[in-house]
Length: 169
Image (cartoon, rainbow, N blue to C red; front, side, top):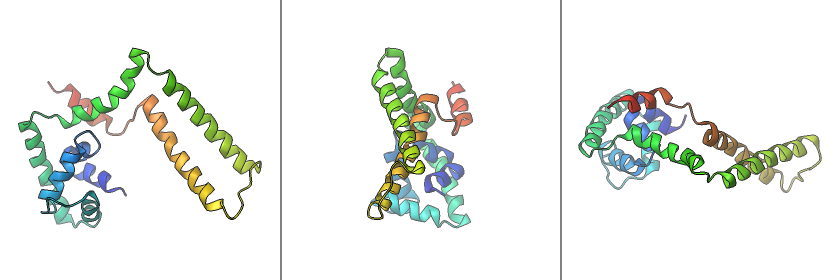
């Protein structure tokens, strides 16, 4: 499991911050408060979270409340920032600036399926020398498909939390 997913399930405000424009602030806060080392890196936090005991996860939940208070003091709504960060990409459509994105998305998806068909039908054969590189590239390209679909159709991840956050005055 991804360490950020664990943080999001235990400490939702910190998790939302890690996925948005204030990620640096959240990492710095976790490094200082959770690890006790202001110079700790994201990888250090990831290791601690992935190997955390129930007591450490309870501490993380408590830190979430502290982070929420700190963000309120700074007049920062983490959930609203997360939503606005994704929304701005979609707002390009209202201004008519999506032709390049539409063309690239269509080209990428069509190319992906043509490449996949070519590989699995035998039109292209991977020699043993490039087989690992070819499968790695196919994996990377496959991983990009959900990002393209989320750009165009949105993400349902945490949509209930986002809707509640936006509904607050």
